[in-house]
Amino acid sequence: MTDEGVMVREEVPDRARTFERLSEDQLSASYRLAAVLLRDRIEAEDAVQDALVRAWRGWPRLRDPARFESWFQRILVNGCHDRLRQRKHWARVAQLPERSGPDEHGRSDERAALRQALESLSVDQRVVVVLRYFGDLTMEQIAERTDSRVGTVKSRLHHGLRALRAAYEAAGRIPAEVDR
Image 1 (cartoon, helix red, strand yellow):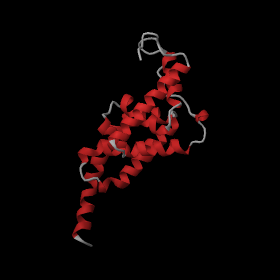
Image 2: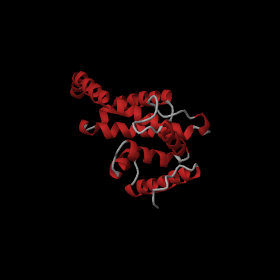
Image 3: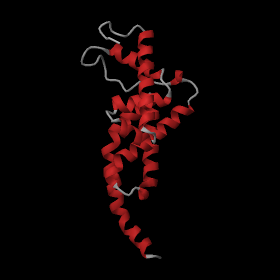
Image 4: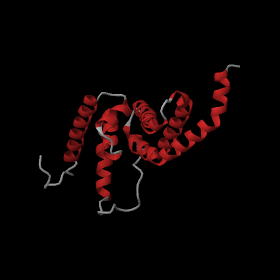
């Protein structure tokens, strides 16, 4: 057995504890992100679980644990993206995680309109819009997590927002006070 083999074996408990701590910190946000992207609670749980398994398998290759969050989100987003690509029909897509009753402004119908508008987006557009507005990420962070260029992210966001606006207009949901 080589010295490296012994070293790796000795580091495993510490590495496992570090992985566990870092991944636990990401679970709630990861589930919410997957639920918004996939529109299905059960599938979101499966996607997060799959991402955790992939992350654990790739964990030895992550050189900087400080970059765990973006690395793990990239794995999760790619997994969600693959799942969305595999779907043949949007009709079977379930709802966003719901709070009971209307939101703090009394607009449960607005959430339903947003869900429907998000469903009208392409997979790439939905991923970028969700990461930007639900994940509150910068263009650079989104590019890193989707393995895209910043210009591509900006283009997808621009076209996605135009498509959202068109979906809202088609549903008669654009408020009169909103200027173009």
